Figure 1 (cartoon, helix red, strand yellow):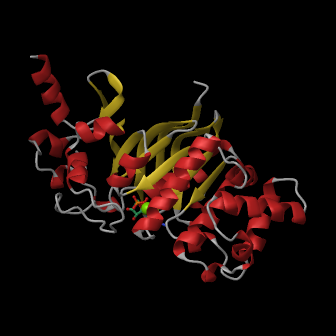
Figure 2 (cartoon, helix red, strand yellow; figure 1 turned 120 degrees about the vertical axis):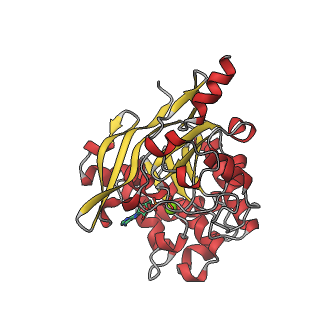
Figure 3 (cartoon, protein in one colour; figure 1 turned 180 degrees about the vertical axis):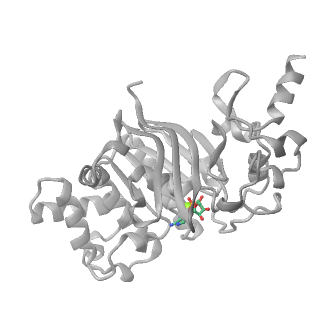
Length: 332
Ligand SMILES: Nc1ncnc2c1ncn2[C@@H]1O[C@H](COP(=O)(O)OP(=O)(O)O)[C@@H](O)[C@H]1O
Ligand SMILES: [Mg+2]
């Protein structure tokens, strides 16, 4: 399909731990269309960041490695691209913003220097032109006094202002894909809402495809058209946002929805689902959620359910044995 921007197929990412390999992302597949905001949710440790770093080719600084699958950006397999090709693709075709804006900014350089450098890496502009362009970029992300911000060092900016600068930097080369990994988790409520608005505006104006990672289903409801739920490195449910709220299928999704924190809350635990995400090196046999699941059946502890389309509708998928029994009941 021509409006397909990113297609991730059977992605597998492993980490070397002691002498064995542990799988942090297991057989993950999804698609993002141009101009679409896809939500990716799940508790801490479910594999959301590792998925995004795998797409960006940014696992280099970690002991992690993509060991299987394909990542197609406009049809081009990123896993077959060289490091230097990936450097070009990052920033020109795709960019990423992180939870902590300061981690993307160099504390010892003025905003001006960093922004101009980022722009000139991908656009044929001289310094003066790049400076004017960066003023425009700062204006477009709602920075009220761009001249002062340009001359500032990162530590002189508030959290919200620095995240705007990071977004300006990420958007300065018109990427087609923006990956936002918990972009507002570190910010307070009002600023969070402003940054989310900014991302909605960017999508509308530039038709950017966005992968929005969050543990906050409240944010997903406001921003996304579709959502993927990850648990223990696997996709356990995928659905249009409305469907997910109206009719969540996976017990894990139900638990996430039941514990939706208020917009802006930093709580990252789930009162309605006791227990924790399993450690990668001691994964339970069978369904990885079984030890925490209130509806667990014998079979769940023995084998792992597949991710299946629900009732023949490929827009909604779920990885749960309960579905088999529900489907049988529905057809009886
Ligand atoms: N640099 C790393 N080295 C070893 N294991 C890692 C590293 N980064 C992430 N992991 C493991 O991968 C799993 C998924 O982590 P992550 O993608 O960061 O979760 P999330 O972003 O959903 O909170 C976790 O079990 C984590 O321990
Ligand atoms: Mg993360």
